[in-house]
Image (cartoon, rainbow, N blue to C red; front, side, top):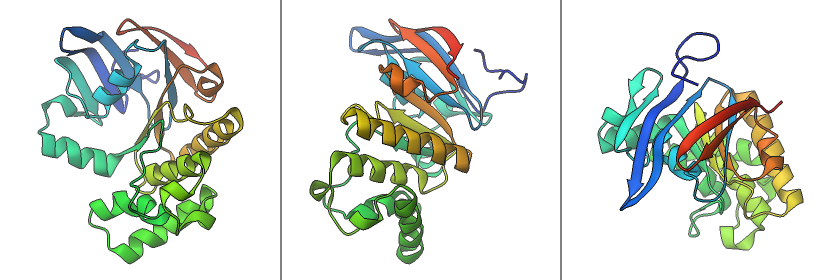
Length: 233
């Protein structure tokens, strides 16, 4: 997949010829990916294949050594650190394997955090966070701290946090890796449903076939190179 989507227009998010290393170890060797608005794409591959590095480059977290990332026509790789940080706060949402909720904050405060970082007033931010807590079935845990809730509840709270600011793209890195099969299925169902309702695209990194089955399309990465794309459903 090049920068052009299947409709012939430029995709919302593209990574082209991405190269990235950590010390002497190459992580990406010319990887490419294009994601259209509202699309769910699963990046699959073995541990160490470069899946997470590709996600981090696309999200502007890790600058590639060479290659280009573009988001809605803007060159993310040419942005300053502050510009990339602002982009991540306003346009991107993140869900990680272990949730990474702030332990000192309540569940509700964690969900509202992206809005607060963008300058939204506390009352307005928490009102929107309550709406998402209801949608993601954690409203009953709103006043608790992350250490007082289950792993599945924490991951649903993390998903609510990712969605609360209406992101254009949700980056999900092994979002079910720390959950049992039942909890994982619930999180993926909620992720797919809420992303579809909100119109967010999803870039999903996983090594589990059951998780990838929720995607519209799968991209295989091996040894830092994207090799194959196929329709998942």
